[in-house]
Length: 341
Image (cartoon, rainbow, N blue to C red; front, side, top):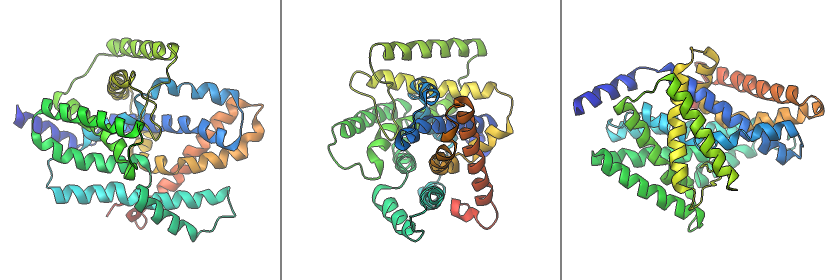
């Protein structure tokens, strides 16, 4: 059985699964939509359509960030020698976290021209060294390092117990503000569990039929709706954590359930090159999309009377602009900035 699991892991690790890329593409679009309303609030833009669309996040909020960790766990090889594993994660996570943070700051010059370009090097270094830069990437890096060693327990159930305890401790540290959340280690403690979920999904190779999948989505939406009708906020772990003592277990169920279903849903789709590209370059879109959201919402806010057009234009413009940056960064001489060397 162990040899069979290793063979499955090797097969997944060596072969790019396009449905996984499409799943990441769907998730990064969810991230953009979720952040749009936040940017509107910051800019003082009032838009009923944006607000109503933002309510969709109540339903994908419980799973869309944990899903990235589940996918990472599904696609990662934790059996490498540690030195090789560490170097690959420094190149794949830390280097782009810093360089894309600086590039995103420069993009911010499009709507904040009074800022100095030189100051962004200082800002980028300080923000990166002290807080780890982007919360998601700092937490992902620490989670992967933690799981690398925890996985050496070599017992799926024992690992699960350790990670659930770690999840609860991270939650308690965060919600009680017991200490400074340096490099978002509290988020990492809460989210490492989902790397294990991804590894288990890869080893067990569980799949469900389309009809059952539809039923699962209906049931999932109904249960989240009950939580909302009871007066609770939609539970999620992102930069902001909205789970509480009552919703701790429901959130665990929703997040694992939703992450698994979005992966299975993407598996049902025909291959779409746009979603595949978004997924394969989701790191770039994640790091720079907010700056473009600010830029285009400022430009298009005069179209308030055409709210749906305004929303579509904003999303499409942000995706196209991020794609241009992505194409440039993936060229021969610039891909070093993404840790590709």
